[in-house]
Length: 406
Image (cartoon, rainbow, N blue to C red; front, side, top):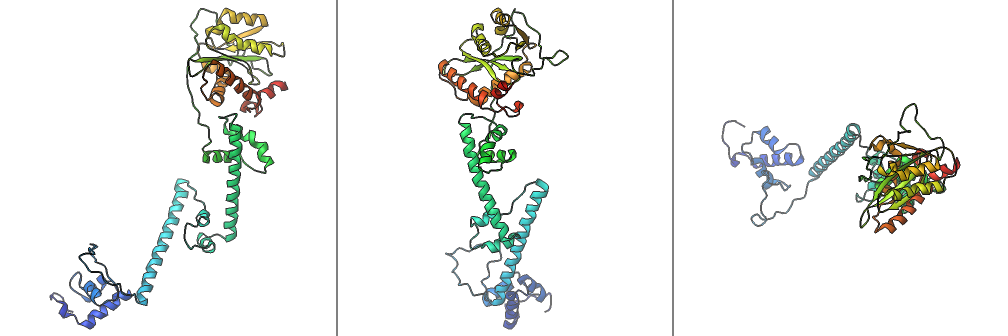
C-alpha cells in the first residue's frame, strides 16, 4: 500500500482484516509485526481487528485495568488448536529458562560462596509439589529412585541417631551442665558404641548446634587479691627458666587461689588447693570473709589427705592471706616450700585460675541462697569435677584417676 497517505478503517477490506487476524492468532506474526509488514497505520488498528474479529480475548495493550462496573464482561472465546500449541510452547520455554536460572544460581552459590545445596529429596518426601511422583522427581533431579530411597533411609537414620545423642547429652548435662563438646564426645563414646552409633567430634558439634545445646562461655571478674602489704614475698619457683620446677607426679606442686561466689545475700568466698600434676582439687573451703584463718582451712584439708612425704611446693599469688605469718607457719610445720607470683599477675598462677573458672563456669551456675547452701553446692561440684569430669590435659582422664595412678 502507498506510504504517506492517511487511511481509515474503510480502506482495509474485510478479507484483509481477517487474514491479518488469522496470522496473528496462529502466532505467525505479532500485532506489531503485522503493522510493520503491511504498513497498517494507527498504533491500535490491529488490536481493534483482533478484538472484533478474532477468537482470542485480547487484553488492553496499555495495561490499564478496566473496572467491572464500567465495562461489561465478555465471555472468553475458546482457543484454536494452533493458539493452544503456541501457548504451551511459550510456557515450556519459560519453564526451561526458569529451571536453567535456578541451576545457575546453585552453581554460583557453590563455586563463589561455598554454599553446598544438597539434592532436594526432602521436597519430594514432604509432598511439597502436588501430583509429583517420585519417579518423575528423580528424573528431574538426575538421580535414580534407588539413590533417593537410600538417601531418605540415611537421613532418617541420622535423625534418629541425633535424637538419641541429644537425649544422652541432656542426661550428662544434669550433673555437668556446662561440659564442653570435646569432653562430651569422650564421655559418651562407650554409650554410643553400645548403641552402634558412629559419631565423630565434628558431627557432635553439628548435632548440638542444631539442638541449641552448645555451651556459651560466660566470664565475670571480681578482685579478691590484695598484694600491697608488709609481709614477705617469696620467689616464683614455677617461672619459666633454668630453675623452673615442673611436676612429674602428684603431690609435688600444689597451687592455691581464692575466688568469690555470689549469693542471694553478701558474697562468700571459695579457697582452693589443687594438685598441679593431676589437676585434682585436694582441698577447699567456703567462707564468708577473707581472714587468713578461713583461707587456711583449704590447705589444712589438703594436708590431711596427703599420702606421701615427698618435698612439696605451695604456689599462690601474693595475696596478704598467703603471705601472713599464720599461713606461713603452716608451711614450716609441714615442710612446704613457698612459691609466689610476681605481683598481681594471674597468668603466673594460671592453673589455679583455670580450676576456679571450671567450677564457677560449669558447675556453680545457680546462685546459692546463703553460706550453707553454697557449702553444699561446692562439695557436690568438687566431687563431680574430681571423679567424673574428663580433663583435656590429662588425655581425657579424670583428675582422681590420675592422682591415684601414680
